[in-house]
Image (spheres, rainbow, N blue to C red):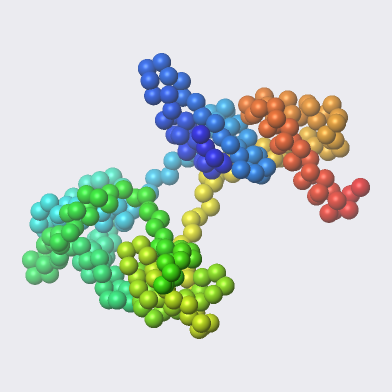
Length: 292
């Protein structure tokens, strides 16, 4: 079951494919649109699946985040000469053209960490400049074992008002860990003074209107794949060609509903809702253009 469009053809196939895991089982899935606009995307998604269309597979050459993970994991096992580890990395096809400058930049980041208002942190590798070797620092082995993969975690900190422990909202993890006691930030329509930043929680007091900083959040890029976007555009374009002068009581309306069911496999009720929605949009555009 998917609440709303998964925004990718491959994602829907993956979710449905995880069902019915028996010898005689048949994978089944249902998609529940969360709005009428989402209904059109879901219809285009089902149409693309019925046509055997898939999202293109994009191969990423030399992803440096994965390289950093592997460098930490290898150094956690034993001490490595930097030249040997570089040659090992280049044996993997995605890193066949990895430059030594890029490798050294990743190594420097792992050895030096990154700068925050509290100083440098997250140095995971010790680099011996004299012998050109590297070995893992304390805690790197555990981190390599528990933090594999390239799917980012989204962790928000709870903001709690003292002394009543009143929950007032959340902050992005990166903003929270860079905050210090005494900092003032805005959340909602009020400003708050940081008292303490603990694990997963920022404890604050009313800043009494002091000028605040504005928190930042990291959003995701538009999730809908290019292939699904094209499928939505094609479906809308075909529907627009069928819609002129259609009314909800005409025989033409029922014809379009039947066509949509045949193309997408939607239920009759969902197809009627989709066609009615597109008729409303079509009529609205005509009205804005001054067409009677």
